[in-house]
Length: 268
Image 1 (tube, rainbow, N blue to C red):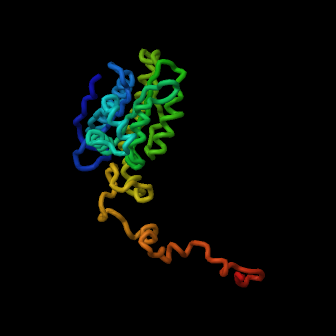
Image 2: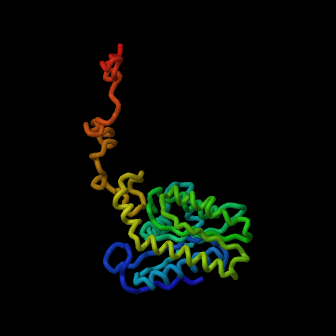
Image 3: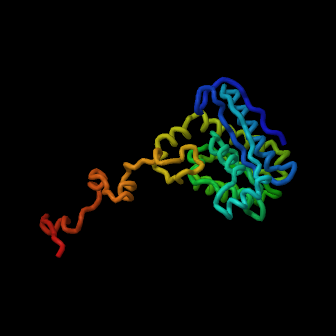
């Protein structure tokens, strides 16, 4: 399968830097050649690029194929540390403006390779990123796997999956309905990209999420200069106390509780 052709039209969407194209990254866990899993992701990416082009937004699409990375992923699962090649892939995913995640279904579940890759990602790597969820299988009996397994996984990663999930069984490839669903999912993805919601959420709420120090997220704290030592948690960790403003809303000790008749009840 070929990677979708990037568009090169006028800027207009939310992305960093003047003239910087929207970056769409496909994550495909297909293992066959040709791969229906990759084909579904490619069609979705191409439709998204076409819609962005029509609205005057430059965009590029790139692909992360997990099959060639299987041994790297397995080592990272065991050691807890991705090697240089896998870190480069994770960094590319972290820099994406949108993700198209596509997996085959085996024995009523998503690919173990796909799940293993997700397991080695930092929990804050994809916060607020728009995502299209897609899966393929040999039978329509697995159609609910996308919403039953992929959607909760990406909810845990705090992404923004589009409302339309994509699933293709063997008999779906010749059906116009599949193209309609792809078009609907691509439209939803473009709307999220153009809204700027992803960046606004990350900018306004980033400090409220749990983060891993020196992680792979683009905003990760990497040295002491990045750490906010003024928070209550950091003050307590350093042996200090919480600020009066924070402590003022907490319940007082038993000695300050009101007793009968509006007086003060003392603890004895």
